Length: 168
Image (cartoon, helix red, strand yellow):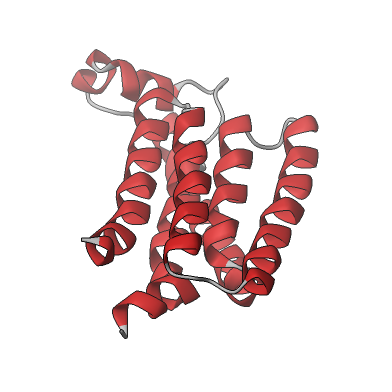
């Protein structure tokens, strides 16, 4: 049961965050809170060494500091900052470089897709959906949670928590 929880909780929450960001342009605080609480609980349950836990927590705090600065400048949303930090906790320093590279790459592609969606002519039915109107609204940002979640899902199988369970 624990194996299933470890292997599926993170992907389910990432998928929810991405979908929520597309549909509402927000990522609920509870997603990041559950990610952090679940990591802490699983670290205890799997007897993660304290040094590794502290190392992963320092990664999350550094990402929070950087993303909070980005949020303060208006470059990203608050939900994105919290999700990036909570995800960094699961990634740890050993995977942060790949995670960062992937979310930057996915974010760039996502931004281009959103720009096309906002400026290209679309069929009339597109505007019948509130979430599509929000995506087309030029005053809104980009649902960057999609890029964060996609990168997290790509890197997750390389994390120490995943490997500690999948190999055992």
